[in-house]
Image (cartoon, rainbow, N blue to C red):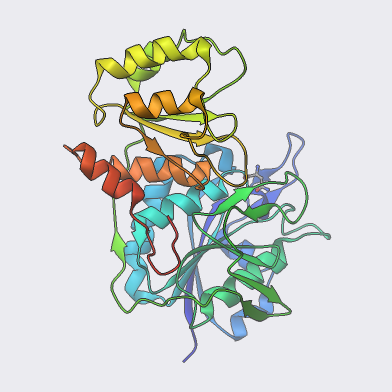
Length: 334
Ligand SMILES: NC(=O)C[C@H](N)C(=O)O
């Protein structure tokens, strides 16, 4: 049977045109697809514009809108392709991985470094590969297809600003590559027979504090007052500098661990954190109940915490269980 796919567009470079003020997303979803006239012979493709933004302007509300749109259309289609700007694509992919879990149908995100209307562009190949991947019977769950690579939705990070190879899979193997329309899978997908589980809430009050040498503790009390979760992006495997420790510990003592959730992660891209390694980190772990991101990407930690804290009245045990639970127990994805 011919596969029916829904192509959702959100803007980004892929749909942008050159203007005197710089690139602006302007193409309609039909115009975008018209650049691949031949692909309509093999699949039934329907397009729908969700928004038309540079992905700099995507927010948690847009992630919820995308999840709601897919939920509404879920039964009508065999798979979904989301065209998205590359700058925050990894955040959207991670957010959708938590908002739509256990999906037997593929939800593929793609974009481009060059607009689809330009003579030299990666947009057509990325869009074509995404459609092929979303139409393949073995595909399932949330993934990014970009520059011939298939990356798990919670493992992608934009690591190049200009190159076509814009995304890397962090601390996890690439799931597949696509060459001349052929999908070569490195990890066999575990297709679930169950139902997709949709979530329609996120808690956006999650703050990222990136440590810099000699950082001032001045803003800590405001951050703790305004946010429900503080992610500290530490330097290496993890540690709290002297300049911050006194005020951080004072703030943590004021709240129960479930009131203000502290998550430790690292600003180093590969190999993850381990706060227990050095004295500068272990003191924190021995004094307070905190979460550790270990090898997760920042994009995944931030969006997962928004999902974890979307439920009300969670105990510390509930928070730990939700944060450390794997969204896919077979492939060990957090
Ligand atoms: N390549 C791109 O798509 C970058 C663009 N600024 C965006 O994220 O929308």
